[in-house]
Image (cartoon, rainbow, N blue to C red):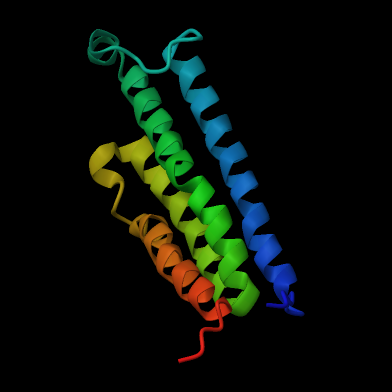
Length: 149
């Protein structure tokens, strides 16, 4: 097998790079919410009592959960984007862009509206991309095997 990087692979790298910007945005969002809620480090989440006493503590938990949810899929997103992009660079870049935009919407909706805002307003877009990338990565890898039947 010869590995050939397509001419427009730069778009794939741009999409993958956007995930680092997404992480920075979400980290900043969590930091601002932590400060507003008065939650001290190393406490990861506000307690139920803190949430009931302070609406900002609830918003902090939502911001933190949105960030963690994104981190849960980040390794697969990087891998999927880079591998799929070897055969389908524009598809991978487009899916990566959809993931980036979808996760921004997801984060804003989750933080401002709460858990029920996660899938509204287009946030579902970011949630579906890891599954689609799992399929496209498997397909791309299968094609790279060059099996002869």
